[in-house]
Image (tube, rainbow, N blue to C red; front, side):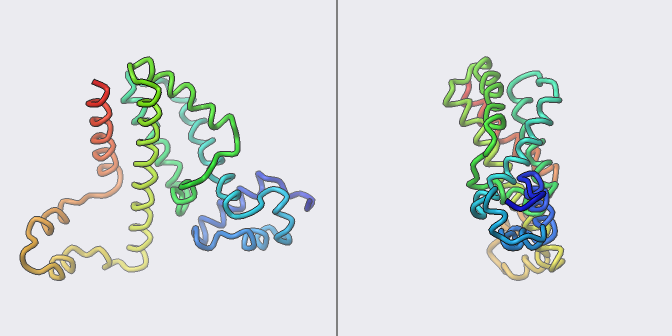
Length: 211
């Protein structure tokens, strides 16, 4: 084991590399170069890129659970799930491709997983069955992951090509016979306003189911 190399140092360096280069450039070899060690030195801690992503997503989710633990419980389950969604999005947005590192990963810290116990208990107290409560949390998580991936991809693409999402160009490209499609395109908003509206639709669906 290389002297001075710890799992915490590896994850910190990996997140820095992610911010600078993006998900596609994040490899164990590139990370070893950044830490100035041979790649095999990292295999003591992470055997491959998937385990590295597991550790990175665990680190980010630990920040989520820490943030939630410092926020008082909301007035009802809806407030709690909305707060969870907002905190999750905030943490993903702290890093380039932040939501992409989460997809398909497995948490490596049981305490992070056990934090879900209190969330399930609150939903159960509100009348959700265990299956419904678990679905509710997973649906909010999946929504935030997908929303932030799209949000970050559009932002990065627009940074490279400012005209990429030009509505005038899109309207001309569509031509005739797509007036509703064009109008809908002009209604699109971004950022917090769009996130809150979509999250509210999801929570409305959960509320309808719980009734």
